[in-house]
Amino acid sequence: MHYDELFKYLGRYNRYLWMSFLLLALSVMSEALHSMIQVFLLVETDHWCSLPGWEEACREEGLNTTECENMMSALRPADDSDSLLIDESKCSQYNYTGFTLGSNISELENTRHSCENGWVFDDSQYKTTVTQEFELVCESARLVSVAMSTAFFGVMISAPFLGNLSDRYGRKKLIVACYSCYILLDFVAAFSPSYWTYVTLRFLASLTHAGVFMPAYIYASEVVGPTERSLATSIAGSFWALGYSITALYAYFIRYWRALLMSICAADVVILAAIILLVPESPRWLHSIGRFDESENINRKASKYAKEEIPDEVYKMLREERGEEEDVHTKENKASVKDLFRKKVIFFRTFVITSLGFVVNLVYYGVSLGAIALSSDDYITVALSAAVEIPACLFSRYFIDRWGRRPVMGFFLSMSGIACIAIAFTSNWLVFTFGLIGKFSISSCYNIHFIFSAEILPTPIRNVGIGVSTMIGSLGSVLAPQLMFIGTGFTQLPYFIFAGVSGIGALLIVTLPETKGTHLPQTIHEGETLGVIIKTQDVSKTDAVTSECHDAPFDVLEMT
Image (cartoon, rainbow, N blue to C red; front, side, top):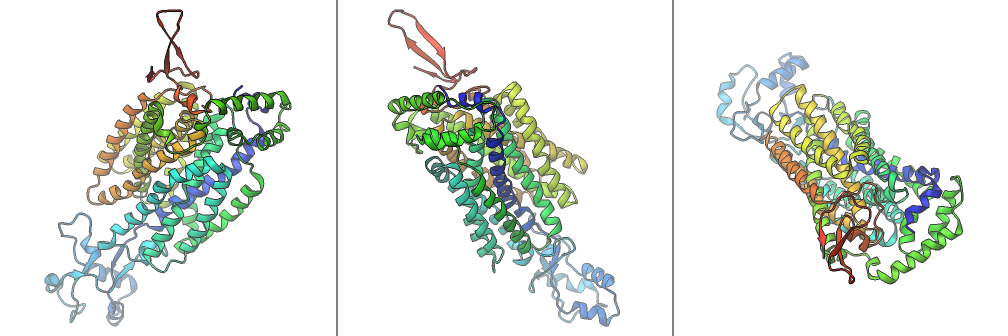
């Protein structure tokens, strides 16, 4: 008897389990806020060299504020350098010693040098940002992309280790621990006295991010039956999109970066308390590691919201089956990264899932970080770019349930590639339109990738496998800010790269088995035989007999 049989009694939409999942999904919303708020924390605003004494000179000449600003603008050097990454009109000044407002500006042409008194920033929209406060402009502009990449790098290196901890100690425990850590670290980061202090604290916080969103997605797939798995994980993805959208709302009303970061952390404390008090551990995970009593207690609570109680005989059958599995697969249930390499089928599928993770991360974060430059209104642009992910998550769920995981993800990877090419060759409102199409497509892929990964990898190594996939796949998110920085001088280059890797991803997806309508593989053996044709030799016959395993409609690899 498979664990999924319990949902015949619990129902497709058990209120207790779904409310638990939805509460836990708030942590995914929070993680998106903490991750993507850097779009506003590190935004570049207009700036120019600080010129002490010029305001006093303007007053002496009887100029009003507007006239003085126009005069100072006229006295700035033109951007006539060969550098594509630095705007000389914002990063250099003339030597104004002995110069008066009535003098000829041509006298200054040979006195140009870098800003020696810092910069003045336009604070009409953003009162303070990390970029302004630590002067991350001109020669230091590269430090903006360094800060972003460092935060994503933290997710990358910690993901496999946190995945292993989740498989060993539980989904809820890890989420609570990691959630608490990054709330505290980001709150402290709001008091950073320097750029490197800020980067260090944000990096330490990012080390715990994967310990929230990975177990939350896994939890979503484990507390529902086979027919609702894609819906549950799609809803979890929608919570990420909701959190991302809310960054624009926070940034619009709170224009000071330190207060912005602190307010986000304060709201998280309430969510964390609700999770601790109201959300149970994943009963499927408890069952998979042999903690039957705890699993059954949770399912008994859930059955109170169902039409009928789960008979004791069902629990007994599940225990007996689990005992038989332990006798046959004792070693398999001790999850570790090594288990991903012991079986060639598991290894190959992990490799493909990881490669797809890299593609999806690179394109997703590249398009996300570049969204703020697609329109003149930062808040509306980011909000719409994030909001389009909600229908992407929900519609992709409908599409994959109707047509399957493989063809739908392949289609959306192709669409994201086409949209990126279009962004590179269009302008004005067309850029923003294709930006939304590309974001919708790659967000659909992001959602499907999590669903696909959770359905292909077996329970004992599911979080470990997704952890490894997230680690290597996150290299794409680390590289994305660097590509966008290069894009300040070569605007089209990043989008050509995004289009190319999307095409590669569309080809890779065909090598995976279809998982539509299948049970979650509970053991490594079930995971190995998912979608595989096994040849067996019947001693009474001379011809080999082949059979499909684990209800998989597509056959990808052949084992002998």
